[in-house]
Image (cartoon, rainbow, N blue to C red):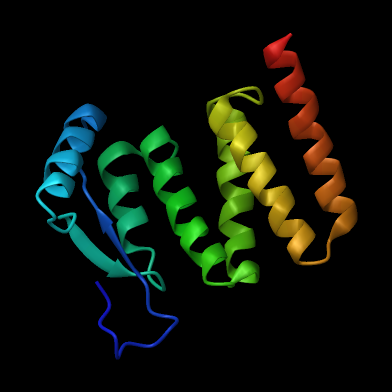
Amino acid sequence: MPSADSPADSCYLFVSLSPSASKQAAAREQRKSRGLVVTGFRVPVESFKYVKAYQQIYGAESPQTLNGMSGLVTVLYNLGRLQEAEAPKVQVLGTGKRVLGVEHPDTLISMDTLASTFRHLGQLKDAEELGLQALESAGRCLA
């Protein structure tokens, strides 16, 4: 984890490349119950090295890679670096629509978060259009 004297822009992600989500969750809970830090490798947000690792291991259009990119975008967004978050989020959404489908929950979440990013960047027309698309798709899923 970043030390107290590290720059505010510095943020580290801990990523496990284990292919089994249930094993990851069990290990995470076990470490959490013992008060241990999540293990894995850590990389600065500024580099997309861990996303590249996901691409090499799982493939560029795998759900794991999309989730990894979404995680990086979330960190950028939370750091207030919205303009940097926009391009990879657009990529995640495009790939998610193509690979998972427009009505997949992960795609709907991507649509919603990108609409929120557009709103915070002042791109209100884009935010409204994408937000309405997400709402309509979610409505079809629930109907």
